[in-house]
Length: 199
Image (cartoon, rainbow, N blue to C red; front, side, top):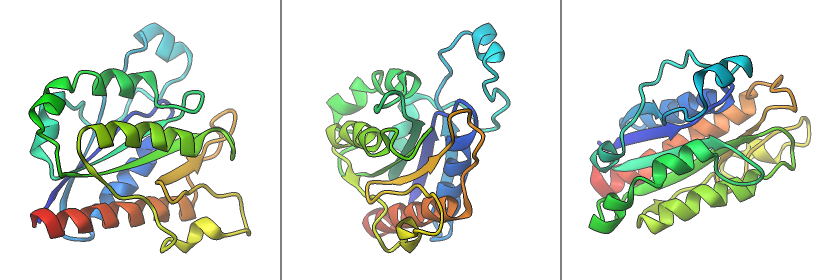
């Protein structure tokens, strides 16, 4: 079966929770799934003062190890409708992988978090997906086979371009059951495609 990397950056833990759900979904297909994060670039004293979630259990990834996986699903919170600087700084170091074609034909996906319903979720997903396409990856989103994203019964994230959550202006809202199910669904779809290609 395939090897999946769920690579994320999370300031307050919302994207971290989605990352774990994506990995659960991937594992449900028989694939192996590792959850890793990118390095924090904010100085420790500033991150502490801003109450960043600094006790995240996922190990920090290295750029070189990306080539060891059949699929990579990337998650980051939005920063003004685009990828976070932490994730961008990490991916900017992957020029060698791009040059060598090490990720060509591998499977990719994206997920994100925003403060509000209209805070740039889809723009951020496209910001991640653009990177994956430049690496030559095959993109798997979150189709409407995840019916939860169509609900009108509650505020909910989710997009055909990837799993999402809405955190609230103060980060007070955690991913809902529907949003976590969307992340699991996307993880299973990504791994399912990778299993077919590489399994």
